[in-house]
Length: 548
Ligand code: ACM
Image (cartoon, protein in one colour):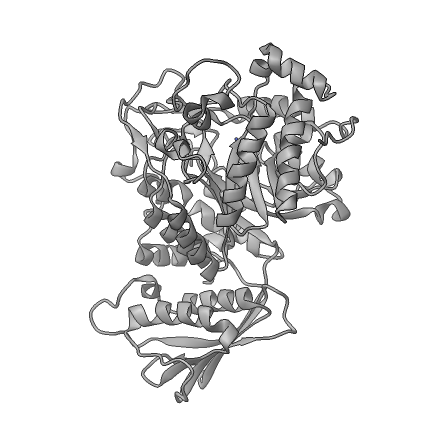
């Protein structure tokens, strides 16, 4: 009943009793994993579980060079348990699987009543992930999620052997990370006066301020907590669209003289950043602080949904396009992206951009997050870019979960558990050679219609369990077989305290009666995505990369 399903499981007779005679051993380099596992086992069992003593029966954590980097072999025998990994991450995943071999109550924060006496069935599990990037994007800009919710989510990602939390930190509706050099980004940009109630174009304003941000110490804490769980936090600072919160804080970043507040409506925004050298310098400074805080190799700079009308209408922008020898506004966006990508390069980092970036030339080192169907993954891989697959119709967990009319604020097309399970990060159109560019995938959680961590639970689980298996498990997968394992897995989520969607729909308090959504049919949606991606389904741009 393991989830995600491991590569191989061999059950034997007998079991390892977890009791007062049990200890744990680990070499110095595995002590962080040892402390994590001891904490996970001690809290629900109240056992002493001494570390590195000559306890009669031991759980031994070991590194094994013969195993691949994230690979592990978990061997449970009545006399002892070995968790061998090709790296610290491998040992950690073996530890996660060990927890899943125990009753669901292992996911409780403390023992219920009597300290339980559990045993681990004798088994050998050999396992490794299919993809290196197994992620979840959480949009903390549309609705701020408090720090405790991120720490809890990180534990839930780790339980599913996911290893990336992509944090969408800035957008039109809020700026969520402290930048020392530019304090107004959070003083002004981290709150808005009102939010639309629902997804309809004419949704009423709720007239209720919303805000919040992470201090730099909050970020350091989140990053360190995630690192102990082998999760990399990938920050995203969205430019040159989705930037109205920054423009509200520093109006000199905008194209027009209009005084903009932090945006209080959803949807694609006409207001862009201007393309002055000073604006690029501003964002270089922001990225300097972001890269100090976040050690991840990849740093997102967005680039999505950037309507060019404002640049087209603006004389100064047109002058910049001409001075820089660029063809048009798309060329200007490429120029902007390249400036920041090059800066990240000097800091030893690589840029992550949404698939709109394929409309223009891009630095070779860019990774493409393909979200509008699979067009970006196909074009990106064929053009030789690293590709991160997150096709909206399969892994946008803000999309409605069924056709039922009690789904809260129903948005876009139905995206069922079975749809999420059918996700394959490698589009069928790619050759085996092209497919090697696909580094993995992630589910994306945009939070316009999720105003609290409780609501995030409803949208994310159990669909994320299905995505996790799509990213981890190698070989044939079968939804019927998954559903049987998921049934057992939901008991783990219950013990953990996850308010997932029940198979038959929302609980009464998970509905939002009277709040209108914006549902689409599949036909409408496919036509929209086809239209939006027409510009990236063609051959590579012919103009040379725009470099300073
Ligand atoms: C996106 O969903 N705008 C990347």
